[in-house]
Image 1 (cartoon, chains in turn yellow, red):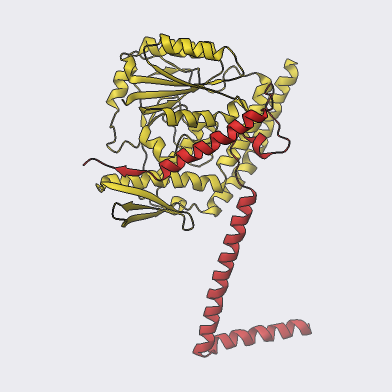
Image 2 (image 1 turned 45 degrees about the vertical axis):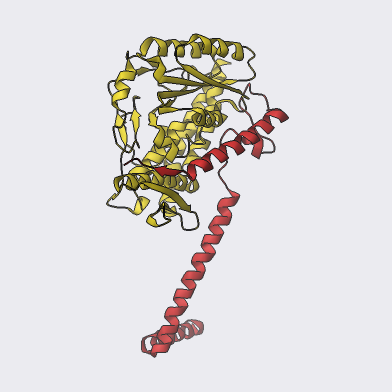
Length: 326
Length: 110
């Protein structure tokens, strides 16, 4: 049976997980509509007895995996992807163990958003960044909308949650290219560009901030890794990948609008295009996902030059705090 | 000075020839430009692809798989051989699942 929502939570703090499960139990009206998928680390021997007790105790479904910690939060995308393929919810939310629902019976409100767009390609934005707009691809990396609720169709078309330890930044980049439309930066009139981000005001959540309570030592490491990851996400290769995922969504929407009953999305990597092919093998539409190198390169260069002093100062400040705390 | 004047004359000669060139000459020049464009675009595309392969974007948090001496975050132990093996298998399985999504046949109830 399809659940209303699946929560994906990677954590190694069992008390936080317990508190999150308590919060779900206290705020939900129909527990049978919810599924919680948890990733725990195998270096904590108390993980298994804890989670097995919770599975038996809670009125909603809990699925779990206990896997190696690897590089901690930086490799968390791998279990998140694994949990996505185990999930069955109509909506999917990838969370940390800190957010809590403030609104009671939020599932009744969420139910109303089912089929908000008939093709089911959209996401619900809840965080303090829910009304933020994005003018460049770099913005998507450092201030994405935290923990949005995706439809299953969205994540199927984007081929999972993505190989980034901040899945929200990854998906924000996809949403950015989705808004650019086919033709990417050279689509000056934004024909075929869509915004499918729905701002939700009725459901309130707490603890959507990221990295609260992280030690100064970890903060320095996170800062360095952040910069590395932002550079990776803004590279031409990754931008073209996001454009590819966004064009998959565009093609699906086109097929839905034109009432194509059965179709497949075929990628032609040498031409950098995606085409819609129907049951008879007839090609109905071909869309390019190429991203202009010059635009990406020039934006990245300009951004690096302009942000370098600030980034260096921020890193020095963090190191100073670390030195003072010692 | 002599070199400059020779060069000037040569350039003027070429330009004069181009302006007054018979149809075949113009055609040759056009074809030459077209061929150069095609050849250069192929060359730069191949070069760009080669370079992008060298600097291929590695997924984060997997440096222990790609780098000889990875620097891990504080308080995190280097993964054991079994854990590395598990990661490789998990990545292969994940790719298989992603390929399934890539090749999914969408069926719509009308």
